[in-house]
Length: 567
Image 1 (cartoon, helix red, strand yellow):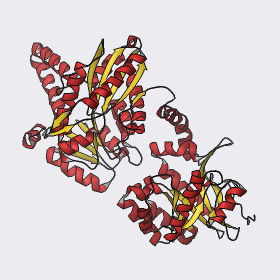
Image 2 (image 1 turned 180 degrees about the vertical axis):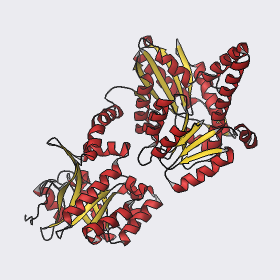
Image 3 (image 1 turned 90 degrees about the horizontal axis):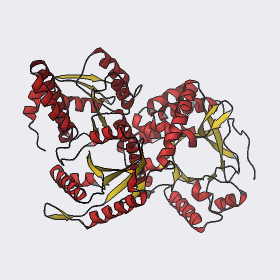
């Protein structure tokens, strides 16, 4: 849809905007774009600053990033919506996972724009918001002057609010409104077009709209009895029917839809296009929309062209239960200083002595010890990982300031994204008088394979300061040997899932051997994790792996095993 910018600017003269972003370069660039459209733009440098400005002024639209210190964008949006349900909010973020999108939907935000920002996308979003604002202003004006005309205008606007202009179908708002009032079991089917963003990118948004219209037509002609069709926006349709349809009938219908989609051909720019859809199904009378999207996320993880029913044993459902359980524990652990490092020795296979220690985060609370398995992924989701890393860095430096050992600290990609490591390490090196050559920074191989240049630059800077770099859990992901070679890492830790099975599984042995040979070829020393018995250790030594780590020597402990380990 082509938008006349000059006309849009005329419409935005009285509209006030608040923009919240912590990253300076992004803030400057986006502020410039917003300034071209709006006369009144206030800028906040993080969520807390944004909240203060919001309380002290009134805004028609709030644009906010997600990941920010002090208060993230989703928390800010919740606070604003609690104060004013009708406040327009647009999320601008690089995070496009289903978790963030689902939470944003539940909060009630009015738009979601992905970074890097595309001008046509933000202009289109602004246009829609401005149209809505102007519609409200028109309603108010008519209400004051001509009551009868206002009633008619209100009826028209309400009809538009529940009807999608592109497809003519009822929209997401209409579906949510209906679901709020159901009192018996229903079945909600969500149909998601696989790779729809690629269609928009390759063929353009107009052709993308044509695909949406075509699919709406196909679905309208192939509906279940007593079912209603909705267009939920972007790449999703919804079909709602009562519980009498039955699970088996709905599953059969979903399979027919997938088959029909694969057989249907849509012509775009002279090219014949066939697509697939992933279908999620939820049955019940409560939280149908939420449950269907959970099932959709799980189905998309498994691949394309899938059918996924919601049930309470879905991984994402279990994850949400864990988040509810561990978020308070995690926040209290940080507030009460219950994040502590445990230390696991890494043994030199030549000298049989402890060569270094890995520092591993634990939560110690009420005589319970929680390993990262319970809280690291949750810490990442709620934005607490950098705080945990800082605690472990500080306490590890304090532990090792008066001994000779080398030690390693795990660094995540989020730590690198927050760009605080250089300054923080320099501060701690001076505070505890530790030579950086004693510190190994362990990063997951995902950092090396994603090719994020800024992260690689930071690692190179830290190496130049004297730190060593290790790739942790190598082999667990799609290992990029060329990238790891280019990183010039000092150590490669072979993923324990292979090491622990080398005595019983030929493939695991072959993988460990190949990684070891590759590591030696680039001058990196090898650490074998999960060494749990003598048989595995014998094979590790046979492969000429320099270091071993695992329960065979010692489990992680709150104190150093400050003695030599002899076999």
